[in-house]
Image (cartoon, rainbow, N blue to C red; front, side):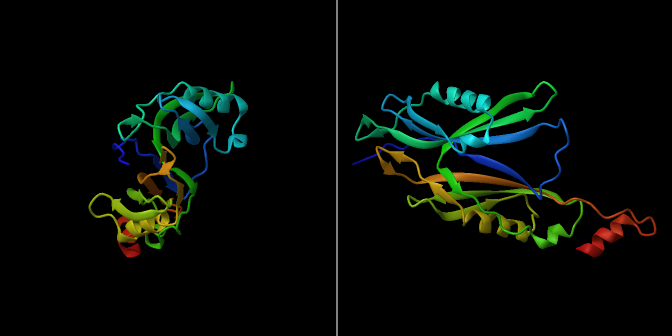
Length: 218
């Protein structure tokens, strides 16, 4: 049995560590996942919102309605259209207001569905550097058993090695529900972008130059 390669969008999750307090009325990002079975015509025949009970009923119905209208080129098995069972991620920006707020769709992607997320302890060296910001992306190659068979980390030159290790150690413990073509699990990829933001909680000491304090803390 041969399968034609299927081109899929890679899911991307952005996480700020550690979490900062949400300012009232400030826009924030929401990512929701659905389990979807696409038929041989490329249209959804089954779909369910993951953790639906956590979301407002009107929001959940809106998400499901959007997925119900979706359509994809069906994958081919031995030259014939086949079914695809996949996770579908939708990303939104929510802007709160006195009238309930607004919801804007930012993107949609297909891929293996994350079942278990894990984040290693925040790197100690950057935790001690107030005001430090940066980001790195981990690319997980997902095997048919739903675990990362390999993790590649990409970041700008000069990124501390502790950040690279943190991304890799986190993704290695994630668990996924692989996609299925014609009922058979397939390999996939998942991209996780972590944004680090260490609060600068130290009070200003005007008796010492700030630059000298930063050098001392390295």
